[in-house]
Amino acid sequence: MIVGMANRDGPGATLDEVSKSIIEALQQDGRRSYTSIGEAVGLSEAAVRQRVQRLLESGVMQIVAVTDPMQVGFNRQAMVGVRVVGDPAVVAAEIESLIEVVYVVVTAGSFDLLVEIVCEDDEHLLEVVSGKIRACAGVTSTETFVYLKLQRQRYDWGTR
Image 1 (cartoon, helix red, strand yellow):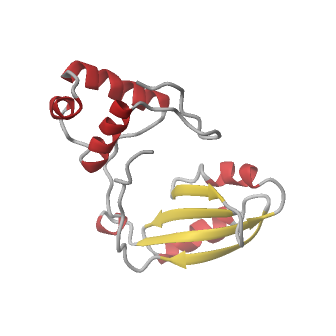
Image 2 (cartoon, rainbow, N blue to C red):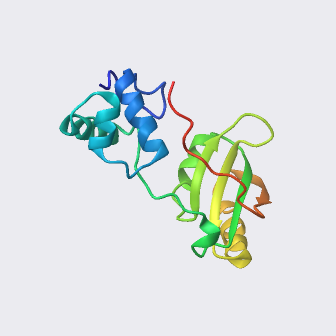
Image 3 (cartoon, rainbow, N blue to C red):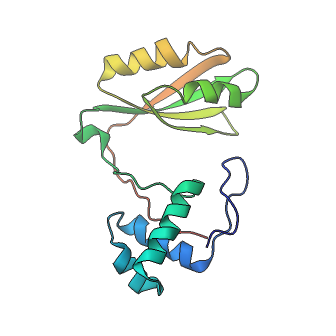
């Protein structure tokens, strides 16, 4: 059962052990049946379905198809370090609206934001970095780290 609601600006939801087990099962295989999960956690198929629905609705988790962008037509991925003047959250909100942006975090250190982008090619990358990210009000500089190979990507880190 979800004890609290997820909040991206706060500590998140408090989950019981059964909900954590359901999440971990779906992290390993997002297509695993509710019946199979129910057998593993001691619930009926209907009870698992209800819990999954609550986890989805609360924003605790999403169930999505994870792809290697380079194998589906996006031949250039990059992480862009962004320095800003003013409130980084305001700039992050503008940058996150870009279709090419898949990940934005506000950071401490050399950059105020880290922005992961997927692009079709180098020309598209240049357009996004120069024409879109650097054009955002408050952006003072960027540094682009081009991905050469996706070595590892995983989402099965479990729950705490």
